[in-house]
Image (cartoon, rainbow, N blue to C red; front, side, top):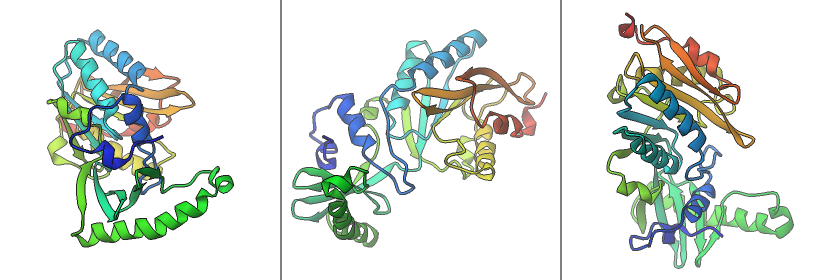
Length: 290
């Protein structure tokens, strides 16, 4: 059973196991119908291979950008692994869904929402009710319960958030364990909007489970990739694009060529990313060219 948001975000709450944390976030479905599903160290195999490539090239990884971090648990794992291998990273983790609200809708009823008021979890007298449905709901009768909760509780919570006032507590939809990592910064960011503060800044960028054709069309992918390459420091910088598929990670590790004119493929995982060719076609900043 998932933990309630009230209990999870309580300031006096003792640390829970990573299993409890992962289960809590995995139950949250965002406005665009994607889940904040995560497992605390699910990219360990990708991290290990990337670290091998860094060592072979003699690279020192300082500034890191992790895009689409979900709960940030895998960002923390990457940071700790880099430290263990002798790097001194400063990591920025980004996601579009970072800020949430915990709304007291009625006595004994709380609703966890995103910053716009979209419901993510209902807490009814300490019991979790999900806003989203499953096939089993048809057999258990929960279909009607969820529909009623969305109309009654979800609607009220959304009005409270959008109108302001009421009993609303801001929360961050990320792992509380990140508070102890002083060199990990979490920011809300949209990959489709160029961020000048990120330009020419990062030695390594990781974009997992975000740049794939299941989420975006080719035009959108090209726009995101054009932004991302501008965030690399230049020749020698690394970029990983990967996604999870059928129990494995499919992806490609790139490195900016020594002459700054193109991306080299350094490593492929399970055959390489489905959008590798799009990334290779993405123009690099002209000032890098030697």
